[in-house]
Image: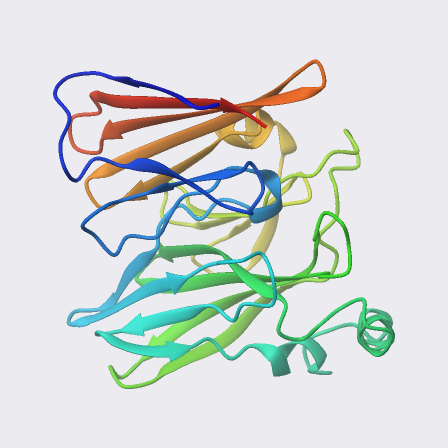
Length: 273
């Protein structure tokens, strides 16, 4: 059973909960808008934003993201024109992956454990005048549909077509070896403007020089959502903060919706999974 608490008068465009088969049982939806729903849970990672301005006059918006937690190809809108993200060929590109990783991928594809179309977008971010997209493949055959491989792409466009240029591979998207618990993938921008990637409990920074450097793991403390199984999303005028924790044999979920400009609380949803 879900509970909701409002802070002030209700509005027609207020976010609300909707039943879903995805992890957690509910997702946050935004009536009267085309904003992407928000879902809690480590299996999906943190999509901090769902749209980017690539260059003046060229806007990219993610339209579908793990709609059914199945082999759903994500779709984007480029200046209002829908087009699918076609990433399948990158999974077996020998120019991107070490030989052992590529051989294992082909083996897993052959036995049906991986699928080229089973991927999701886990991040959109901008850094030093460039735009990036993070995508990860997962195993549809695994019970938790865990991520296995990932890629960071630099995005380019002339307004008609989207070009994805691979700039960084994540050949082993694993659990945090220190806790043996899943860590959601995250792509973000540091205050310095550098790109930040969190994968498997490890932080990596893309500097202005173009090099990727490992960062001390204690910096994860700056991202409490990674440590506490919570998450932060911005959707339009709303800021959505979610977290989850165990209570005996059940999992407690909580979502706080605030005004993105004033940070004033609007409502809180809570339920047990």
